[in-house]
Image (tube, rainbow, N blue to C red):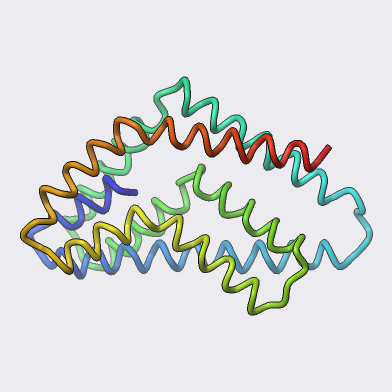
Length: 199
């Protein structure tokens, strides 16, 4: 996400508007997935037809997170995905603002690691048995966390456009070098937690 956002902000034609469209596309995607997850999960929880469903979901989420953690620790998936996102973002700069919005949808919907965390948060929110307002606040906070790679560059460019390029270059270099280690630790930790909870 960060690489794509940086490219969008680096465009000479309406960069901030393109970044806002990109941000909107990402937010719309997370909102749809969040509402669908909460609604379907809530219905399954209310009906007692599948009493072991919660444990099964925990085990599946735990296994997926553990797999993602190990893949990030020993693979090159982040670099490949970053190049793919950059390539798609570069192409979108040639077209309309609607294409930047579509770019936000596509990149968010294909960011598998982030979506697993998002669904895990939805699962925890459902298990907590809180009311709809608290569910909305919890999922909004998680969506904001996932969108940090978009929000930080956007607001940085908005507040300090002259200094943002150099700062974003340094952040981008740091993320490319160390993000897979950080992602691996987080994924493995939460993966083990969900596996223990499921069993």
